[in-house]
Image 1 (tube, rainbow, N blue to C red):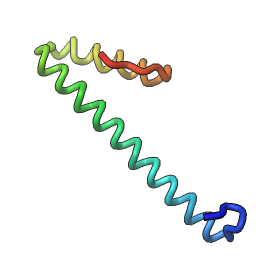
Image 2 (cartoon, rainbow, N blue to C red):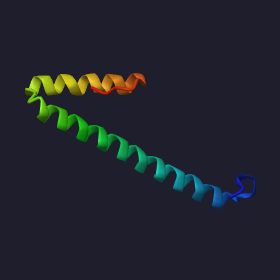
Image 3 (tube, helix red, strand yellow):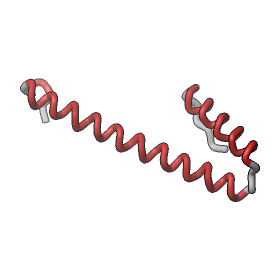
Image 4 (cartoon, rainbow, N blue to C red):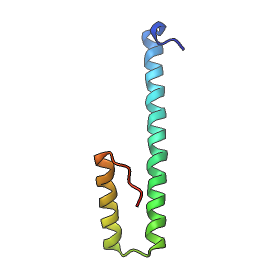
Length: 70
């Protein structure tokens, strides 16, 4: 699709589709991350406090844009 020839409606539709695909992709990424964290918590039998600390650490890694693999 040639983006330079899109009409206003077609451009809006393309942007809406891109937005939905981005949201879906992000959902997949975050869901997978949560599943890995849950598995880690169970595997190492973390206490509630340890689990909360892990979640806070992972949030900070995500916020800072670093790649975190506990």
